[in-house]
Length: 51
Image (cartoon, rainbow, N blue to C red; front, side, top):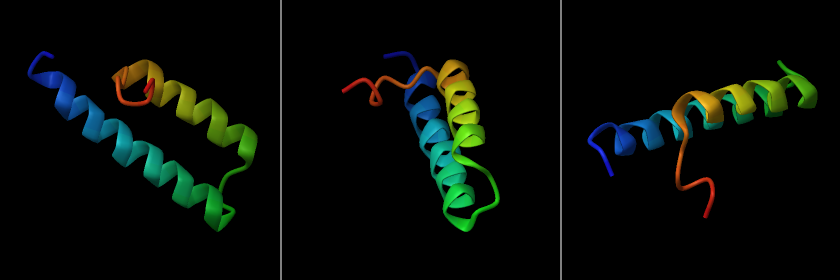
């Protein structure tokens, strides 16, 4: 693991949790959530998501 990979894991979790919060509050639709989450996955490339 490089030095930025653990940081990217945390950034991914923060972004994913925020998107989940918005979805639960009804601020975004399921389709918007999936698009945004896919963008976050591509940006941060989390390894823990694969497990």
